[in-house]
Amino acid sequence: LERVGGTKTIKVDVRIIATTNRDLLQSVKDGDFREDLYYRLNVFPLNSPALRDRKEDIPLISASFLQEYSRKHGRKLESFSPEAMELMMRYSWPGNVRELQNVVERAVILSTGGAAVLPASLPLEVQQLSRSGVSTMTVAHTIPSTPEIENSAAAESSASPQNSQPASPETVATTSGLVLGSEDFTLAAVERELILKCLRECSGNRTHAADMMQVSIRTLRNKLNQYKDEGRQEFAEFF
Image (cartoon, rainbow, N blue to C red; front, side, top):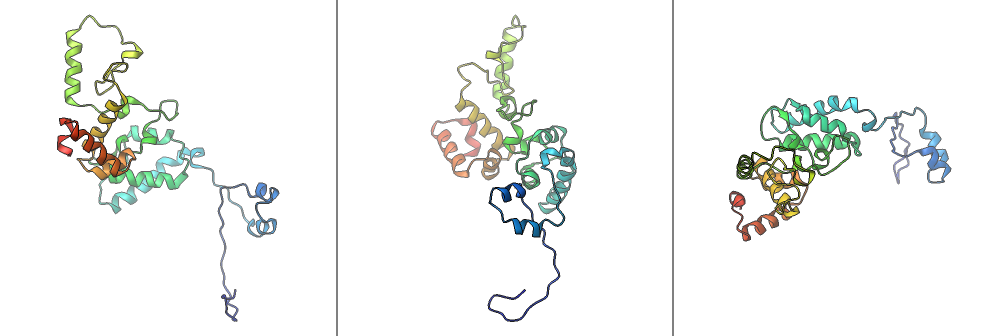
């Protein structure tokens, strides 16, 4: 090769590795990729399937990343809980290994104790997977449990022993005590419970809580200011 503006030829001994997520043969046919360049590069092709097509690799790859980032961030995490790994195995990983790498590092940062990564430290798009593998808003996983609500729900239950039949779908209670179909079950109520849960999970760290919910720190701050103006005492420790 010769440097731009240079006159001396420099000999180099290199091999070029080119990667793409496109079908280059089809791109050649469509006129989007030069045919001569394709045949210059296509000496020894290697096809790497997407992570969703080789999910048996997820435990091994994630364990390697967990070890790397636990050491980097000074954590003592050793594994993923069975529930967390089940969610990771069901997720489709559109970003492939790079996305898995980012998810593991994020989980390491957000983990607050123990030797295993829990589902709460995973991104919402990974947590919100139903048994069928379809991404949905699973209320039982996102609405936290608070002692005040649980005690209230328990009192109502003991006061009505005759209601021993299973509840109808319209009145099923979530793990927090909020009741589907009731006047109290609103989007705003669900949002408040989720924010409260994330703040407690992150020991009041707003940056980590915002990251867990995948919202900006400004959005979280505005919500807390709103709750302060509304006089919501359950958030008093976070104002």
